[in-house]
Amino acid sequence: MSSGGIYCTGNIVVDTLVRPVDAMPPWSTTTYVDSISTHLGGNGAVTAYAAAMMGVRVKLAGAVGRDHAGDYAIERLAAAGVDVSTVQRLESVATAETVGLVNREGNRLFFHELGASAVFAAAGLPFGSEMIRGFTFFHYGSVFCLPALRPDAKRVLERAKAAGLTISVDSDWDTEGRWIDEFGPLCPLMEYLFVNLEEGTKLTGSRDPEGIGGFFRERGVPTVIVKTGARGCSVFTAGEAFESPAFAVDVVDSTGAGDCFCGAFLAGLCRGFNLRQAARLANAAAAHSIQKVGCTEGVADYETTSAWMAQR
Image (cartoon, one colour):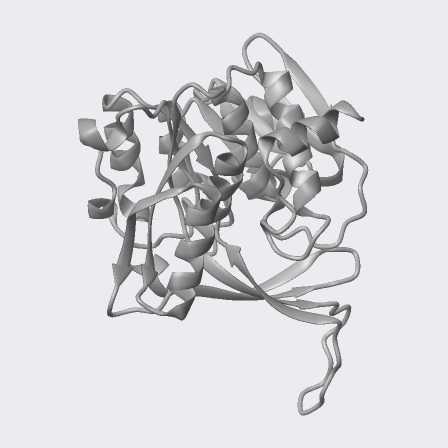
């Protein structure tokens, strides 16, 4: 059983995924595909969903429009057990949406409309004692994907730390290209950093997990988790550095796998797991995610995931 929980912020998106698209067809033509489907997406939403499926208490702060897409996102999150009481329903903007093209290898290309994510700001992140009672972690996903919150990122982390929460951050992709200039000052405030190889290379200039982990450890991050895709992950702390291999499964769609990884990793920590156990649970959640189209369609509950792991 879990102890504590995760107060999470990040973008909330509805994804329309088209599969398979292995090459871009010429304009003014029609191409038949196997599937066009709608799914829950967004760094904040998917991380929260995966953590809740692992049996951990989760509250998500973010924004959606008062529209059909917003209804869909809220319903999917609530069905997984996520507390959506701090998700804003906005009249003036639409819910963030993405059209994703997925090829036969499970790789994806996104076209994204920011929608409500563009206006979600620090005022939507309360840290009062009643609001955070029972939570141990504050997870900040989508550092670069929430434009109105982005200038206040440092202040948000300072408020979370002052409230006694353990801080984790997922770097995400910086479409504005400021990378470490903006991300660097956040490092001393976080206890856990999740970053994938592509983002890590942009942030540090290093192309290998060891270089990325060392870079952030030198800048004050106690624990760095580098997501290495088909290889699994590498974890770096003061006391140890280790690799946790991915589970071998058939890849259908890799969309959101890294966010499922983050949610399950944090859920493992809430359950009292050590880093190696949390990394294995995170790899299992990601392995389930990539076997189906959509970020969360393949995510199983904690008991099912644990039984699946025990057979491998």
